[in-house]
Length: 335
Image (cartoon, rainbow, N blue to C red; front, side, top):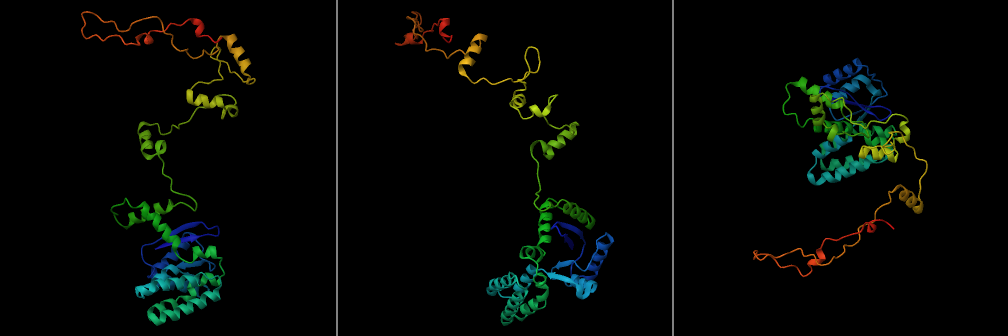
């Protein structure tokens, strides 16, 4: 048995869990006493959403009396009604029940539920009695004029069922519980790791995976954080600059003079091609153009047959085309 609280901001919080069932009123009374002992103030302004357990309903009525604000889970009630009906009537019963609850006005919703009760009584008396005994508690949210969007959350115990789903996903690797105390410890640990609204369970890969962290812990390097050391001086000036990116990849700082090791700074950018060419030509760094096509020199035979070698191939008819080319130095220099 689990108690889940939702505050005014919509945050869900597990208040506690106990071994037992909601049909036992004594256990439910112990539940309330434990909540108060741990600091929760059980005021009469709390809206209690429960399933059809007779024990928890009895304990609530004894505690709060006529001032009890109690909402019965509509999903549990829908299932209980369908259990009394033959299969051919279940879909129609579900549709009528949900249509009545979708009404925004309390009077309209109650009229439709009473009409639904008369329809059920013609089919099964037990199903009609099941609806009639909780008809007011089913419409508590309508009577309080709770907005439709908020009513979708508070009309059932689905928030607890969502928590149970997360717990089942977390405990699927547990093969055997060694006593109830172990089960309670596991449940408490898993409930504390349930993500808040909008958050997700994050699994790390690569450097931050459990395997990598375990290996670093064995070697004693778990405290080391992978990062790029920032240069001394003004960090903001080079944090996202092109020079910083070049340094990260090639491990060479392009703003450090290779001769004097001093820090260089950019004065201006030259975009005129003629000026760039003149400067590089003056420094002897002008680019060498691509090699010209090979020259065909006069008759240099690559395949020379020997009289003693009967397996020697005759020269190819275009063998002179494969001769070693000869270039002059002027052919390499940009004119």
